[in-house]
Image 1 (cartoon, rainbow, N blue to C red):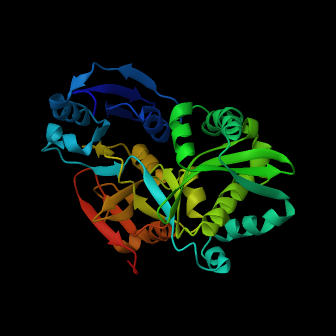
Image 2: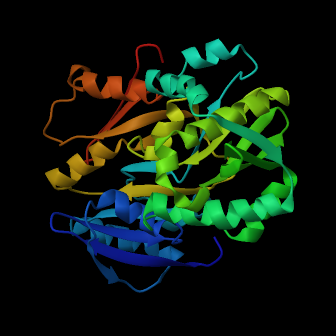
Length: 346
C-alpha cells in the first residue's frame, strides 16, 4: 500500500451490480471476469482505509457483490466483516522434478498437451538461449509489445515497461524459438537456485497463426529442455490468475503443474455479499475461482442457502477440481455457511 486512500467504483450490469474497493491494480481483470459484457460504471469518491468497512456494509446491504483488493497487512481497516471468500491476486504453477526421464514428464501431462509436444518434431522449430542486447530489443519491441495486447484484447492485461523486463533479462537471459532461421517467439527466464523461472513471453508481431502452429508449446518445451541441461530440478511457469476458467491457468495446468502461493504478492481479492441473484451465483461458479484453505487450493462453489449441502451433489464439480490440480471444493452460501469438501485422496 502506497496510500491510505483507496479507489472505489461501482459496476452496474443488466442482472447484477459489483462494487470495487482497492488499490486499483486489477480493476480491469476483476471487471472482465465478473461481467460477460461491459457494465455501466459509477466513479465513487476515494475512501480512506478506515472507511472501507462502512462502504462494504453499505453496498452489500444494497445487494451488491463487493470486491476489496487490498494488502493483507491492512485487514485492520475492515475487521469484523463476514468475508464471503478470499482469492490470491496471483498464483504460481510449478512443474516438479524435471530432472526425471522425459517420458515420465510426458506421462504426467494432459493428453492433448502430450500430443502437441510430440507433434513439434514435424514443425521444424529450433531454439537458442541468448544474452545479447539486440536479441532482447527484438523480443521486447517485436514480440512482447504486440503479443500481450492482442492476446488479452486490451482487457485486464498487465504490460511491463522495457526497464523492468530488461532487469530480469540481465539476471538470466532469453529463450528464442526459431522457425527456420527466423526468431519468431521468445521468453525471458532466470535460474534461481535449482529452479528455472519463466517470465514475460511474446510472439513475433502478435501473429496468432504461429500460435496455431504450436509456437507457444514449442517455447515452453524448449525452455524445459534448456532448464534440464542447466541442472534445474523445478520449472516455475510463472503467475496465473486464480480461476480455472482462465486460459493461462489451463494452459499451464496441462503440463502437469501444481498450484503454489506466490509469496512475494501480499494483495488479495476479498469478496463480500449478503444476498446474491441466481445469475451472479451461476457466473461465479462458471469461473472456477480458486481459494486457499489451510495452505491448499480449492475451487469455490457458491450455492443458494436453500439448497441441501450434500457431498453427493457436487461430484461433477469435484471431478472438475481434480482435473485442474486442486484439492477439492469450498462450498459457500451468501448467508455465511461454509463447507470444505476435499478430494478422496487429499
